[in-house]
Amino acid sequence: ATMTGLLQALLVASAAAGRVGILGESGGDIQSCSEVESWTENFFVGSLLPDTIPEAVRKIIAKNAWKSSGNDTLAEYRAVGPDCDTRFRDISFLQTQAIAAQVGSLANISNVDAYGGWKFVYGPGCPVGVTVMDALARMQSAGVTDAFVFDQDILAYENIQTGVTNKQIRSYLAAHPEWDVTFYSLNGLTGQPGYFELLLAKLKQQIQFAYPLVPASDLCIVLPSQGVPLTSEAKPGSGVATLRGVFHDLLSALPQYNLTLVFNNKGGEGFPPPQNKTAWSEPVDKVKIPEMAAMYSCSHVMVTPILEWPQVDYDVYVYQGIGTGDEPGYKTTFENAGKKYRGMPSWDQTNEDWTGQPPVAAVPSIAPELPAFVGRLIADVLSGGAGKYDLTIITGGSVGITRT
Image 1 (tube, rainbow, N blue to C red):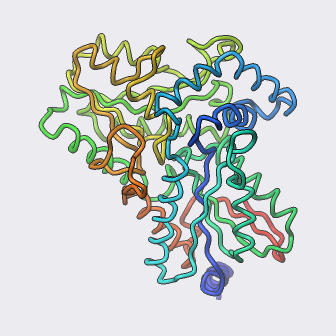
Image 2 (cartoon, rainbow, N blue to C red):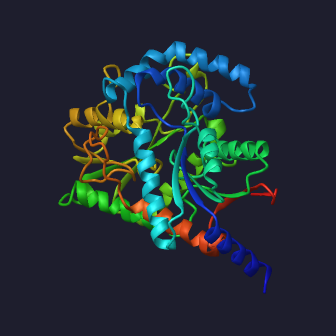
């Protein structure tokens, strides 16, 4: 037998004998107004600010950023609802449960569990026990032997998102050498076999749902993404750089449509000091959306977050929706210019149930396409097909080897 064959046999045997855990993770989002300050500062320290800056300095910068624009941030979350509840963590976990159900069905196994962890949901005002590190402890306690990690912040691999989670996994395993486990961390979905075809089909489906009778020549399609400082975008492992490539592939595949990429930034042009001292990704939605409303000839507009976001967060509800008292959202800007507007959900909520606001149902419907895709990928890895996919494999315990 070849070494590859032996490895595949070992993987299959391990999956059959062990327990499978699927960790849906992200930076998280707000489900109570009491969480906004802590989460925002944690997000700046742990993701937005370069880790070349000492952590103590990053914390000072984050505190200053909150002092300068915290009221605006809180107003944005209050625009979602009076309690600031995006339902983000609820829906994250439901999406992960849907993936776990797919894996169990496809692999014909019952020992598959879903876990949720959110990197920046901790500190004053936040719930206790919901971070990625907390999820890892639960997975170890449950005896998980094969763990899969799916980032629900961004569909491309991103050093400041998935990369941070992988560092946390390595740190946890170093502190718990007794845990015999193999982690398969998906390096985003954009580079996985078949994903672009899935994205293209999803976009066509949303166009047909939103404007079935509108000709392509009279429709503008906006695909927003969350921007980053340009210095971060230029570095290896930038999700924004990857998404730009995927966007250009969409342009080639759908030449009949007017597709526009815009970035919703957390700093740079239009922000107060110190956030405006660094250049961020372009084109900036603060500039591009009013320009499109005033100058583009299309009378129908569809905005969809499916290029970047695996699930809807407050950026979609607020910026791509009705906006705030100080900043009009995309919907208001386009409708004030006389254009018909349809905002669409991301990969988590169904077109039919989408209202542009957090769902009110206790258990909202989850769109099936992404769970089916990720579920098939995981089931294939469990059957020995890991070599087909873009994964970071991290092992702990008796094996004691980390492979990237």
